[in-house]
Amino acid sequence: MESSSFIIEFLCGAILFAVGVRVLKLALRTGGRHAWLLGTYLALSGISYGFYSIPLIFDLGTLFTPLTFAGRVIYSISVYFMLEFTRLAFRSKQVWATALVYALMLSLTVGVSVSAIRGDWEGYGVSNPWFWCEWLGYTLGPLWVGIEGILALRNARKRVRIGLCEPIVANRYLLWGLFGIFQVCASLVIVQMYAGYETEHAFAFGPDLVLCGFETLTAFMVWLAFCAPKLYRNWVAGGAPSVSSRIGS
Image (cartoon, rainbow, N blue to C red; front, side, top):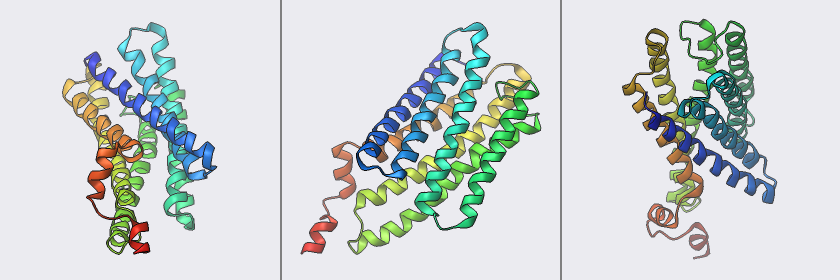
C-alpha cells in the first residue's frame, strides 16, 4: 500500500475537520443543537482520520498501535453525534430512531472493546466476530444517513416546485444522502481490504485505491454541502427566483 493513499486519507480528514469547525462556529452564533451535533461529528471524524493515517505515512514504530486504536475510539465517539444528528433532524418523534441510536452505539462499543481485549487493537481482524459488531455500528449509521437524505430530497424537490424551499436546501439533502451512501461503500471496501491484510499482512493496492476514491467523494460531498463556492450555488439555483421573491410577487 503506497504512502500517497494515506496522504489522501489525511487530506480527506483535514477537509472534514475544517468543515466541522465551520459548522461549530455557526453553532456558537446560533446555539442550534443540530449544528453542534453535526459539527462535532465532522470535526471528530476528521481527527480520527489523522490518527489512522499519520502512523501509516510515517514510520512511528511502537506508536503505531496506540495511535490507530485512538483513531478507532475517536471515530466511534463521532458516530454517536452523527446518529443523534440524524435522529434529531429527521426522526425526532420516532421511538424506533432513539432505539436505533442506542443499538448501534452498543454494537460499536462492544465491538471495539472486546476486540481490543482479545488483542485486535488495530481492528483489522475480520475473522474476529467482534469486528463485525464494530463494523455494523459504523456502517448502518451512514446507511441511515443516506436513506434519510434521499427521502428528504424527494420531499424538498416537491416544495421547490411550489416555491416553499430553496433549491440549494434540496441540493444539500442530496449531498448529505450521497455522503452516507459513499460512506457505506467505503465500509464494504474495508472488509475486502482487511480480509487481505489478515492473510497477506499487507493492504492490497487495488482495494486501497477504491477506498481512497470513496473517502475523497465523502469529503467532497461534505465540502459542497456546507462550504460550496458561489459558482456552485448559482448553478444549483439555475437562475430561478428565490423563495422569498416568489412569495413577495
